[in-house]
Amino acid sequence: MYNQQTLADTFPTSPFSADISSRIIDELRELYFGQFDNHWFITLLDSNAFNTSRLRYIQNMLVIQSIYSTEAAVFNDGIETLEEVILTARRYILPVLRDKLRISGFYKSRGNDSKEELVMRDLFSYTFPYNLKRLEELTIDLKENLL
Image 1 (cartoon, helix red, strand yellow):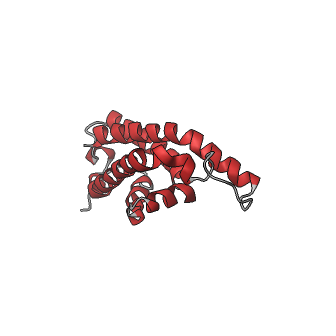
Image 2: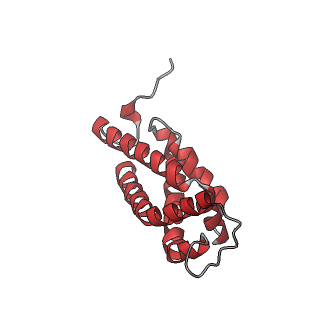
Image 3: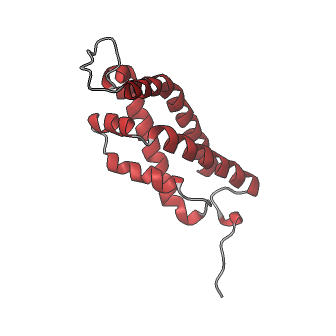
């Protein structure tokens, strides 16, 4: 007879731990898809020799609704890729973010950019450090709760 997996068969050892992990994944999903899964950030990663095809591991991890032991490899790859993204962003993107987005005082505007585009890039540059820190905190929490 076929045995159906339950939450007790998941990574976490208790239903309470499974609830915490599900909450963390929900927050990670909202933060990643809302703030990091955009053209500017992916372009910045790509310009710093990050293999952006690895971002698929994060997306695959974040679409999972229930945490089962059969998804161990998906979560391991996703967490590893998140850690690489955070490290790349801290090391290479954060120090020169305003220059890369062409909104610093050192960049002379050519008038090609619309006002809305400039405002969106400026807003992204101001919120990016906080969002990156929050992404790192959630990744550490998820790693501790799953592994």
